[in-house]
Image (cartoon, rainbow, N blue to C red; front, side, top):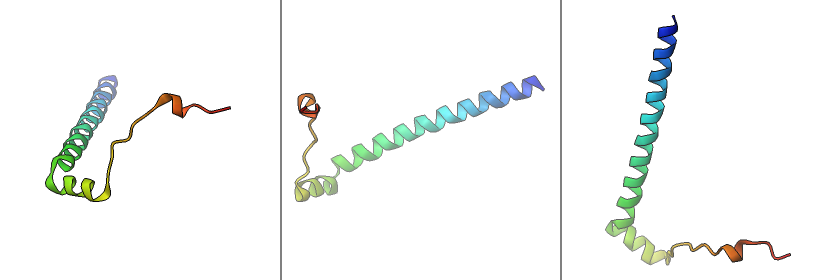
Length: 63
């Protein structure tokens, strides 16, 4: 019985890790593919898209 539970936990952990890695790979591939495609470049140019810049000193409360 214990072996069955341990085996099940290992399978669930392996599935969760595999799903997370697949999510990361697909997300990065799609984002990179869209950003570097001609349609993506055209949409960025058409909408005036600019990379967001983060300025930590501007993020602080001005109390």
